[in-house]
Length: 250
Ligand code: 13P
Image (tube, rainbow, N blue to C red; front, side, top):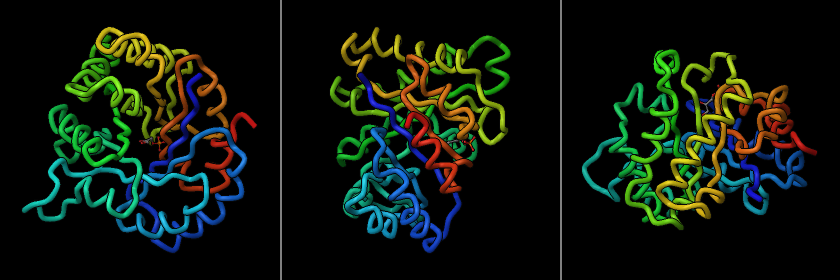
C-alpha cells in the first residue's frame, strides 16, 4: 500500500514570522496523521521552517533549485545548499516555473538528477494546458513530461520521486479536475512508468494530484485508486484548512 503524501506549496507567500506561527499551530493538529506532511516554503523561510519543524512529523521542502552544485549563477540556490541546511524535498518543474522562468523538460531532468546527487527527494510537476486538454493531448503531454523528467534515473530513484499531476487549468482557478479525470491521468502516468521501469516501481511511486485542492474535495480525490495525496497551493496558506486536508481520512 502506498501512503498518502500531502504537500503544501506556499509559492511566493509567507514571511518568516508567519511561517513560524503556521508550523507551531499546525504541529499538534497533524501529529496523529498516518499521512506524510510536507511544506514547501520560500527560500527565505527555509531555515526558520526547519528549526520549527524539528521533532515534528512535518517535513520541509524548497520550491526550486539549480542543477549545478555551485558557480556563477547569480540569484540561484543549488541542491547542495538546500541539503546543507537540512531540506529534504524540492519541487521541480512546477508549471509556474515552466511558464514564467523558461523551465523545460531538459532542465527539469537535470534538476531531478542533481536533487538525487544531493540526497533530496524531488516532487516533479507535470500537467497539461487547457488548450492541450481540449485537443485531446492530455495523456500524451503528461506521460512525455514524466518520461523526460525521469530519464536516466535508476528504479530506486524513480521509487523515491514524487510526481505531482497538476492540470494547469485547475491551478488557482477554483476548477478541480473531476476525481475520475484526475485518477485516469494519474493511471496513465503510472502505466508509462510501468512500461519503462516495470510493475514494482510503478506500484511504489507516489503520484499526487494538484489544482484547487481544498478540504471539501480532498477526501473524494485522495480516496481514488491511483491518487496518492495532493500538492496544495492556496489552501495550504490557511492552517485550519490545510490541517483538514492532511486529516481528510481521520
Ligand atoms: P492551487 O491549490 O492554489 O490551485 O495551486 C496548486 C499548485 O500549483 C500547487 O503546486
